[in-house]
Image (tube, rainbow, N blue to C red):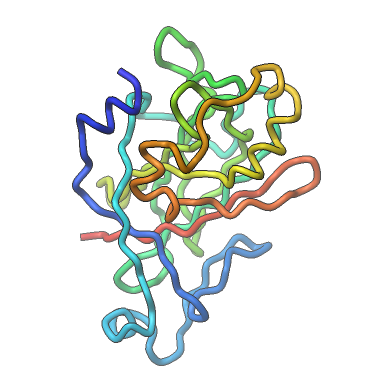
Length: 233
């Protein structure tokens, strides 16, 4: 069953959130941190008053390629080729707008040639892993820029676990212009043009614009960041 069919057959009703904090939340910077303002208006009262804006978005389907019990590790490439990608995934409490320390962030995605590990006869555990968030709520992964496979735009799957419970299931997306630039390089260029862009992807159109990674160049590779707001209760 492909992910389009999975999405059509299974609407995920639980909702998560991606946080927009304006001036009250610093952007992910060189230190990889998320710092909530301690000024008046922050926290639950600030959320209630509208001073802090936490925007809820629909969660996105898990898809058919999740494998439970992956390794806790930062580097998930297992030597697979591709453009280096540093993921900086921040987790904050959507009610208080404060970073969550110790959340388990679980990611998985296809390799540069569009293959997933551990499913459909594929061996290995490449492009899969779990990291705990630090005191600033940030989990770091070293991976490669994902490839593409038929019928889907480029994406990374993510789950967030807090206190042994899944509090967010989603997918993370990349700007098409950045993907176009990456795919002109080897090994991506060996596959030819991809068949799906963000605007036409059936899952992206149901919340992907709020799950867009902020991607910047870093040497010959890239850094991709996002802040994910979750509800703990």
